Length: 123
Image (tube, rainbow, N blue to C red):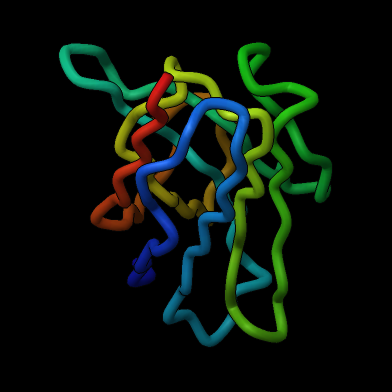
């Protein structure tokens, strides 16, 4: 497993932007497929964005066109740029990593998780 630490969560007004970052303690970070999930109060954890093993980026329909996932293998980090934030984006955001094959959009495919960072969007 790899240790993951998220940062960047904050309180922001609707329409604003935030950039979340996730630092990984892996010697071979490039061997991990990375993703972001979120969990709002009273709701189940849901997929936000992820890289496939081939390096393609995929997004939930609810964030497509507003969020961008990126990674820097030299720095062992993955980021989530969030623009045009809406109140419904309010959630705890989690970074996740996987070394095995599986569906990028399913949380069960990931074997390492960060502790989460809170994003609150005020309307």
